[in-house]
Length: 172
Image (cartoon, rainbow, N blue to C red; front, side, top):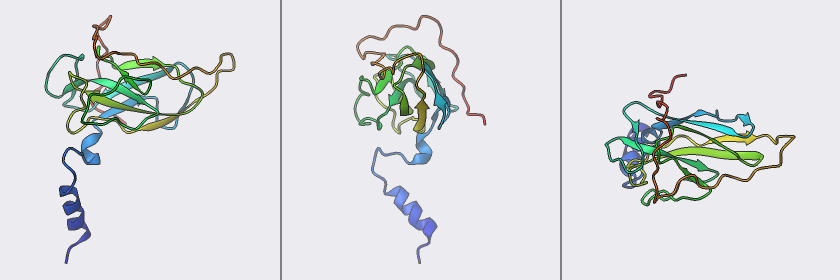
């Protein structure tokens, strides 16, 4: 008689090709802000990667490296295509590991997705968990719209200064 454990193992082995199980996905993480935080503009966002992964600017092809894409208020894109450039997908093709964004007041979701040298998601995808934050309205400033895309697929300028090191392991 099949046990629950064997049924779960079978279900995992029948997963669709190209679809990673949750345990394989979260090799990236958001250092800041924390899930559930109430923040003010500008919102400082800091990216992190688990061990064995590194950051490289767009256009640099090296195994187990990539550059960050910040997903704002959206589901992940089609993982079989290049990561889009729009107000929901902010590209950091220079190898940046942190940023500041201005968001409208209210609830927002943030997630990071690592793209390869061609802005394609890795297989399996390297993502963080999706977090929810609340942006408090600054009493002295009007609400600000979501940021425009910060990086274009066609141009990959080098960062002005060397990017900060990416924390390699999440410490709690």
